[in-house]
Length: 372
Image 1 (cartoon, rainbow, N blue to C red):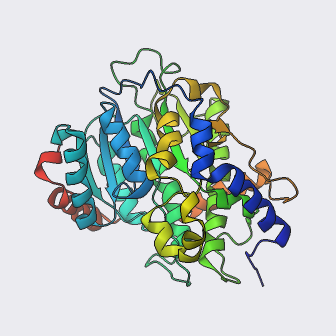
Image 2 (cartoon, rainbow, N blue to C red; image 1 turned 180 degrees about the horizontal axis):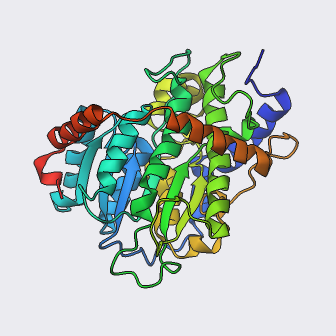
């Protein structure tokens, strides 16, 4: 039987790393060296943030709006998303046509494809500069989606894969204002977790069909999958091979990076890990501190100096493995993960009827002020 519970050595290494590097005190020390004097001008830039209605996603959305960007919030709950958008507009003072809400369930391959393909048609604009894969979940009991996938995996890993792959056509489309694609690439930032350090990629049982013992460990395995997936995307991008065979040249370069935000006080953490929250609440980061590296990776020129597929914390590329934990993966294992995700994605296609119904739903649930 599979058991995701990490060894005592791995748990110990994780706690040592966490207490020294993942806390708000660690962020405050690291951020003292950040250059805050030249915030990037994001005028004309277009971002998509999943899970944007709370926590880290909300903080990243606010930063993009404040910098002058336009943001598409991809959220599951219409009510929560609308409330968050209203609050963001109030806090930032930006025009309503720069913040848009789209309702999509990140555990549904069909919904993601219908949404992304609608987006790529230009229904909501002809440009997309960055995708922040932030949405996630942590269910502590086994649960399958209507498409037959384990819900944690479907949301955290498969959903991230499908959305990114389906948005590549518009990400690779070079805006008219950009002359040199290599100098101003599109970007995909995947928000993983320090919990990934506790798991080795298990390509034989990606959905934990055997031995589902604790949602915390399943979540951590998903986060390891995200890191490996980003490595694979990065290798494809750096090789110069087309990311999508149906993409037309000239193609804008797309840069792929993953990061973890440290230990952050979010509604998801409080709900899913109450014991951890109660034990470490005095050390948890604020959402904007957790989002800082997301914004830096999504906007700065300095971040482009790093190899693709890196794993960041506090604006620095980190080792993907803690010493003595033996949780590294090979390129072959990352390739196997990618191939498996491709196969799962192909199993679920939206019918024409579903596609039409979903397009109508998007139109009905998007505030009229948010339509482009």
